[in-house]
Image 1 (tube, one colour):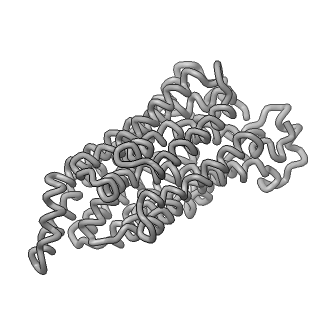
Image 2: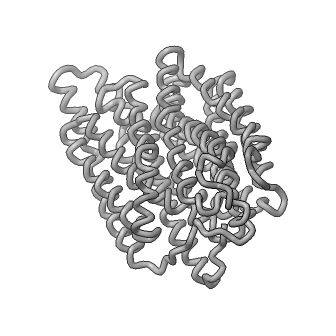
Image 3: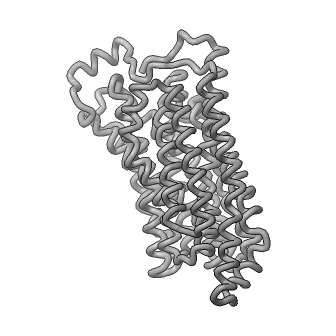
Length: 424
């Protein structure tokens, strides 16, 4: 891929700052789900399996909307596409208001799907944009910087929303359990309506950001451009399906997003229900998971590519995921919960490493290839639901077995899969 070297350094720096702000928004909105799962489970009287439809509704939008997003970006360009994505997210936030007042779970899910749709458009534009802002061998480093922006927001999101929704959280759960009839309905209605103010604020912020992006100095880049050598090697390529390493990377990313969401979005419920940790304490564990990811990103920024290649970073990440996963399954009490949180370190460099490895050599097929990688975010819709099913069938701790084969495949991609079918 051709780097936008024609852009002055100052323009590139401003671009990174703007895209970093977008990744902050990605993280804040995405990691609210870790609080919404236990919150809606109480407010809408759901079981584990039903409550994880929160992440299904949110992440399935990436599968449905990734290819349409690529088409939109072809028409609008990156900057206008990002602005439009923020507007769509604002619409999703508005839908939470009637959902809260009617306490209708299905309406909450529609709002989450619409927010995910806006994020699909944003992510389809932002991720390849970051990849081509500099040399390919340091792409994981730049994406790690974006990851810090994303996860700092993710640390803040559950703390902020948890403080609003779970005021007297443990007492509220006990009170709701003993109430009956109209009194119980009134208490649940009051709980559901706590979400109104934060989502109105979110709507306003998204509208302001949409205008900011639209009128910003963010330059257009040609993510599909090819250098001369790459163009020659791609002369015999007529279809995206002639790049098997892309599809192996897509599946690895599908599994990765699933285990990342499981680590971040199940830990509050797991700590509370399976390990007996009060909600007043458990609500901080999602932030601990994301804090661990930030540590991993910082390590990536200082070590890639100077001391470690993207490929080796991915191998180490997969091995750590297998190790922490087994400790979560076989450990007791806080040790098990801590192992789930430490999956954040294992997960940190997986996304930054897979993107450039999967897009390597695609040239003019880059936009479509990026769309497939965005579709892989649907792993966050499927695997947490599988976790929830096994949590009800067996128990929340044994349900973590679902992550073990996922990390095993990521390890395969890091060692062999990324080379499959590549001409160089």
